[in-house]
Length: 401
Image 1 (cartoon, helix red, strand yellow):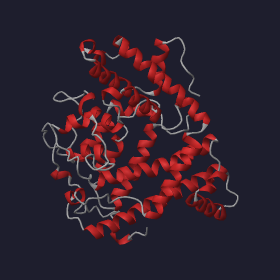
Image 2: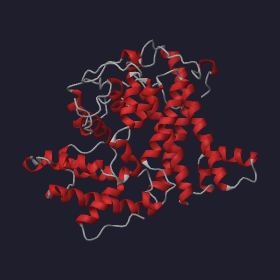
Image 3: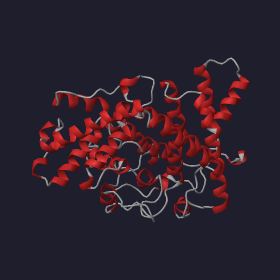
Image 4: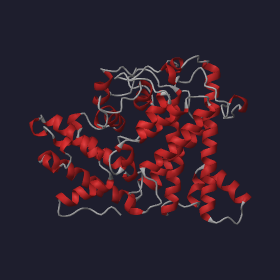
């Protein structure tokens, strides 16, 4: 999708009417004095960065567990890459960059150890206690589990950041959306996040930035691992075209530089497509406020039809050649065993949880509430901590390599 250079916000410092206004936020659950030096969304971003949950992302899996090499992406490096893309999109569309960045930085807080493997295992184990949803767990972390401030639990983030966290992938109350996870229902009863509407554009660009980042960087990590080869990229028209362009321009380029040149072009093409598509939607809908975006009835920051097809092909390619590769599946199976063993051990003996806050009062709770306490503790673990806990409690721990 072509974009209009004259409409870009680079260097203008101008916030569009459809952008969130940090000086007119809907506020925080617990009222606080206004900062004389930072906007409300800057404060949110800063609070997110200084959390324990943010630091833990360093040792949580993206695709390859930490044991497999230091050069692969973790949840932390992925999150930083998403934030960079989200900020670039926000600047181009004249949005509030701090809000877009904050939503991007917090979007993966709720992920378990071992990536989606751990999430799937916990969801199955908690089937009778509401299941497990990483977005809902992210909300629980920033509204309850982070206990740092004297006057409230959580981070007391603004309405706009929390709305973006829970709704960046679309409305939660909609046809075909499924049940709203319990942690979101609980918080929403005290601080209405408009679950039936779309989010503002800042959260929408954070969501599409996530797609752009992992579509590109999972291919990059797959190439580094050898599970994907450059020849295999010929299956993907977009990547094949970019690979041909780079080879034509740099015929003697060594492979690591070649891969980087293809990956950076892929990001650029996808970012430019989203900008052009969003500009067209803005011109059609003509929103005059952030609420007009929320009530537009559809997402406004997304891929064009051409890039929707490219995105779909890349995802299928990654599932076929990377996520479901036998070597990756073997490690995933071992990771699943670790999560299941720890869950069973902590349900049987909460004393096995080293955190005194996590096990406080758990013995007297009904099974469902005990399961939720164990959920919070397990979901907060890093890969390395989960492996260490398993070795402490069991005679044999599966290898994750």
